[in-house]
Image 1 (cartoon, rainbow, N blue to C red):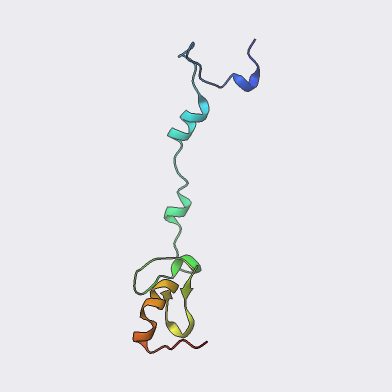
Image 2: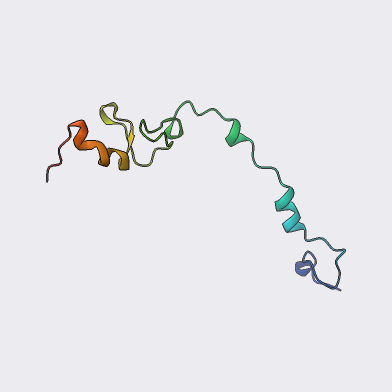
Length: 85
């Protein structure tokens, strides 16, 4: 008798047994909600005006800048911003 915890493992001595964990991961379809849900509001709907990258982490929205933090640091002086201590 094989214990239940080992019954799902694929063994070299018995190739007819199926490893259900790996076959389920291969055949499972991705969740369609993320691909079809419209991003009209929230952090995921806003993009950097320079690079086009989406997301809210590091997106500067103040004064309508709408640029990622890295892009803003590269172009701040050209835009007329000055860094004070």
